[in-house]
Length: 326
Ligand SMILES: [Zn+2]
Image (cartoon, rainbow, N blue to C red; front, side, top):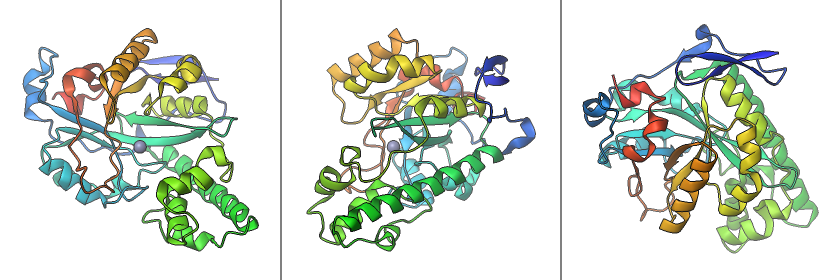
């Protein structure tokens, strides 16, 4: 079948795709917040040059997935930190967006986003960010409902395996850690620490929770399918926090599957790694994006302590006219 593909210029081109994914129509778009663009972006829009003082963070979590803070608190912090363009990219949920009204944003421009968890046959997980110039459709919401129940099922299997190994942990212990509807590995890790089965959060990941432990089954969604899904939703797919080893192994395949870009500007990076990521993106003709992957658990690491200058990601921003110009 032929699917519509969002090229970012409002052009639809045909492509062979997955048989059970239908392209959305305009009426399928539920809502789209169009906040006022930051003045510095507007001022520079005519020349398509972005002020390097315009600060972006395209990778932020709220308590709707595994972040520490409620959505409005995150927005307040973004405002106080002077961020100009942000995206909330919770794991497999867009629930945070139901709590946002345009007047809660102030001068901060918001790009609709998500971080999808995908699985490889090895058990490894790759995270694919999706950014949506036209907002979210009802069809996408339905897909996420399924993804969330699949997450709960995988966790139930993992908890069962731990119980079979003699560890006194239950599904209720893990659910007690969740503030939103999405359950994930970090909730299990915290439950294991609270139950004194693991000595610390890293210890929990090393012994029980990490994919290498094979306790929680990997997600069923392959990366290529996530990329296709995002494309059918007229969004941009961006590979989250790729490592050099993962790039070596997976980049060519992901690019062939239609990946639009990769995170190049990553907190806890260094100059060597950043240059390597920039080169990889250029070699594969991918967009560059980036953000802090802020979860808010560390009080010494406030939102805004890491940001990406708009100049570095201007090609990405050009797909989001409401964030980059009037
Ligand atoms: Zn993240």
